[in-house]
Amino acid sequence: MGHASKNKPDKANISNISKISTCSLSSGSSGNCILIKSGGASILIDAGISARNTVESLASFNVDITSIDAIFITHEHIDHVKGLKVISSKYKIPVYMIWESFNSLHEDYKFSMSEIINFISPQEAVVIGDLTVECYQTPHDSAASVGYIIKQGDQKFVGIATDIGCVTDEVIAALSGCEIIYIESNHDLEMLKVSSYPANLKRRIKSKQGHLSNVDCAKTLPVLIKNGTRKILLYHLSKENNTREIAFMESRKSIIEAKLNVGTIFLGVAPQFEPSQLLEIHIEI
Image (cartoon, rainbow, N blue to C red; front, side):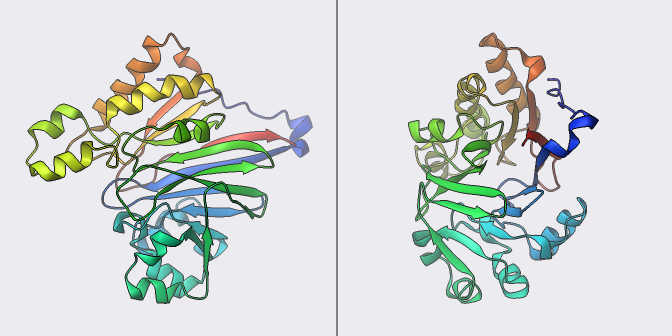
């Protein structure tokens, strides 16, 4: 699927243009982390890779970890908080998360964040520089789980829905209007069915509080595209029960069958162990 038009700003009007950039630093059961930056702020969504890997991945985009203004956590599972203890202790970056998720962490994690933790709740807006960050509830089998919407003023730009067992009305409402979305496309149902996973783990993954299948992800995309989404990064793919090609083809098929103009949509897949490409939005101000 082709890339969306880059909407390069007119040089004559360059002073009236701002930019939001985002990429995945890592994605999947081994660790999740997303970078979002603008002219006035840089934030991370989740810290699921080691502090060293986080520093190195950020450096590949010429971002120093000391320039990160805040870290927002979706939930407390280790693939979303693995690097949080060391990053918190060493760099003292403010952390935002739901109380129930924080309270479910090991005591040494909680101690490392004792001076920098900020508790948030769904629909609450947090302003970081020129970015406004809101969280919304997502269905997952953790103590608490949220997705995030990144805005400037009242306008949505980036939406994140990872580790969701199903697509709820709340997920659709939150993501609608976001130009860029990260959405889980965790597993292929047939691959999961014949995998070596034990039956109870398969049931957990397929449950409404587990992980989103390729099929359910793909069904959602036409709705979001019709509501303004132009760049999609499939996220949190299973290493054992999915492939980049299968996930991509399932979503592309759904978009084509919805008779949408695929030439205007960017569809990508977040790599597991390395950063994705940088996606950008140019905004008239």
